[in-house]
Length: 172
Image (cartoon, rainbow, N blue to C red; front, side):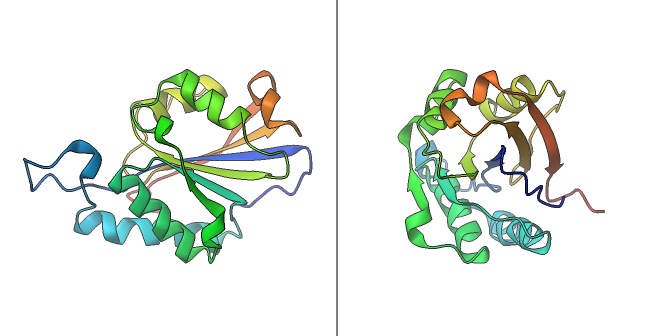
């Protein structure tokens, strides 16, 4: 799980929001908060990254409550600046093309990008990009992808490989 320091390798982290609460049936899906497990898994998973010297230059999150809260846990645990967190409404209920467009619009000064969002899009996107066969990215799961490019606008044409796949119940 160590970071590869190659300058020609952009790193993309797809992070599914932590476990959300379904206790209020009247609450809009967008507004669902994290449940108790979600509040413990998010800082735990962020700490795993810290323990492996992994951080992000930029976080782009779905503005849905559960994704936003998960991203904020990672921001705090990784000791990043609030300026390194942005929200993009296109991630909520995103299709494949939405994610491609978001990533292609990222500044090339960013070498390590984390997207916080939802399934089934994140699982399908990871599989298509890396040629992997992940059955499901569970809540608070992290898919790390190395992309052989210096230009986010051309990331989809570049060689992409799975660096690691981790999730809360993946105890090593």
